[in-house]
Length: 116
Image 1 (tube, helix red, strand yellow):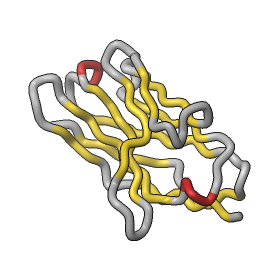
Image 2: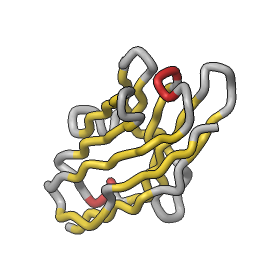
Image 3: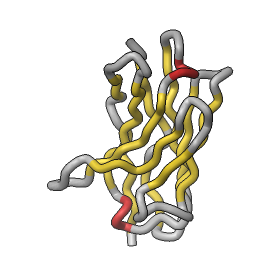
Image 4: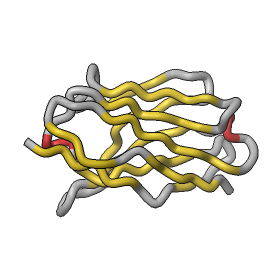
């Protein structure tokens, strides 16, 4: 089981940037597919970005070109660089690990608030 802790959330003005980090404990981090999700008030949790164990990335259309996902397997960390933020990006952001053997782990989330 992977333990995940997000950090880096906060309040930022529209057009600004934030960098989220996800620190993982436990073994086999490098073999997990890692993803960011977000959940805005009153809305369902949605996929934001993902990165495979080989480093292949994919993004939701709403963030493509603005957000960059990365991972550092040596440090058991994953990051999400968020640029050109707008109020619609306001949400709690969660990191998640998906094991190649089945199962997933989730962090507690970090709040991102973008003011107009």
